[in-house]
Length: 82
Image (cartoon, rainbow, N blue to C red; front, side, top):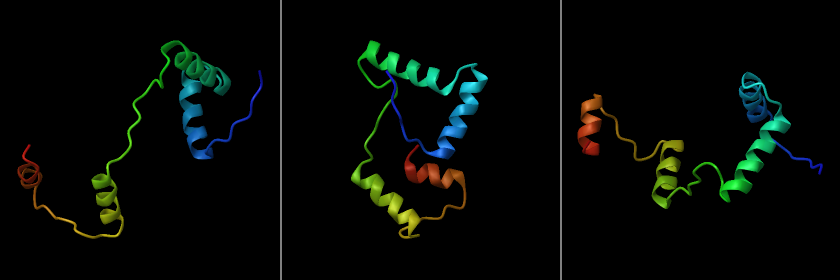
């Protein structure tokens, strides 16, 4: 079977470097992915949907809102309680 896919050029080039280092072509890598999906009946990596809270924090960073500046990593860790 033959199919066409559209991919992001930057992602493709970066991934191709990895495939080359493993001695496989893009087509072989895609076939490997599809084979793993069909055998395991799942996507072979974790997929997450970001929470509303995380999306809000991402927007805050993008728009430089509600930011906290820490003087040290220890101060950050204390605030995070870790």
